[in-house]
Length: 313
Ligand code: APR
Image (cartoon, rainbow, N blue to C red):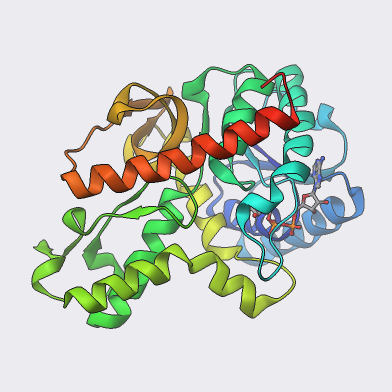
């Protein structure tokens, strides 16, 4: 039987997710939005593209959670995106309320799903979502590290004029300005990055990676990035549905790993048929450890603000 992916939020990222999933024939798609017109319109448009692509999947749009019942995977983008000049953290109040509603509905309709959250501010929203949905922590995960790493890889590939596929890299920590690109785990054709680029250039690329979302939001003016976030979300869903056991940087629940307890943050994890099957505890230098701690502290501080907004968190 074909798998079922429900997309909660049919905006820019939700629509792109549906389009990629349909073209890959990864699963049937339910596109859900509080705005039924957007969900139904995009579903119809993408469904009509399958006669060109030849993809054999079902795709519907809806504003009724019953239609998402028993999903294998749920990807959440419901919420508001940043406007130019806003930080991801500025979205907290509004998106927390939306995520509460989404989490409670997932608990009722798809308690066995693998849930990928994309809504920002990512680390705090995914932590709240896990609590609101009551799903186990291995089944609730946040998309950020793949996107941040892919931005880092892209900038390196442009600077060094090598194909992105020849670059291995990793970005850890929270999905914000304190994220931690990891030069020690970055290799070009298997060679350490430090041997191929000056420190000044690498520092500039790291800074551009940290501000990667803001750069796009400034250019777009009315929203923020959506193609790369959607591509990253699909990679996570595919690793789960096909039990690929890929090691991917994701926002996962830490219970002592990397010295962090009871918090979501970006770390390498193995995603397979059981969801987050393992947190891969790579060795960090003292400097990397300090940067990760700083990033984790930023997530912790924002979670304290979330707890003031909703005392039940
Ligand atoms: N339930 C379902 N959908 C909702 C709800 C809700 N309670 N509230 C809002 N939405 C829908 C909106 O109607 C809109 O169609 O969420 C969609 C969000 O789409 P966009 O505004 O286009 O935002 P997008 O660019 O897709 O980003 C979504 O992901 O990366 C993050 O920062 C980004 O938080 C933002 C989210």
